[in-house]
Length: 157
Image (tube, rainbow, N blue to C red):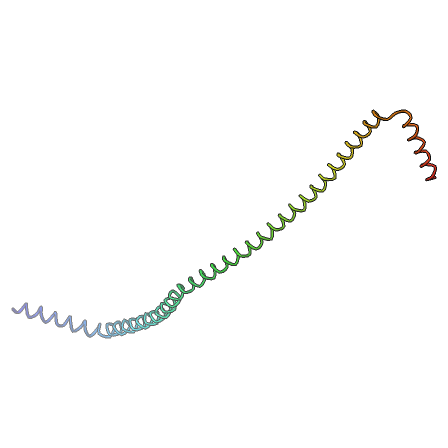
């Protein structure tokens, strides 16, 4: 037992010596650890407040994004309707211009065709008349026509 008592005594001396020697460094360590943990907790709180503020800000933006999307959609529909109207008006103007140009061209072609037909008709009538006159004209009539033509020319001069 005596050795057991000496072992206990040695143990208590060792513990006492360790407490005496390590108490201040341990106290400093605990204080430093406490201080650093407090600073970290404070920094985390600040970050949490910032994150909460950003979360609220983004939540508001997200909640308003649906209304913004609806607004953009309605504006886009209005723009499309206006564009359709403009396209219809421009198409109507273009079709009216095409119809007008077609009518003008058709009238021009018709008048050209009438002139060509009239000219061709006159040419054929004159040719046919000439042929008939040559066939039916006698020599006495030829002489008489030449004399009348000569008189007319003399009057003009």
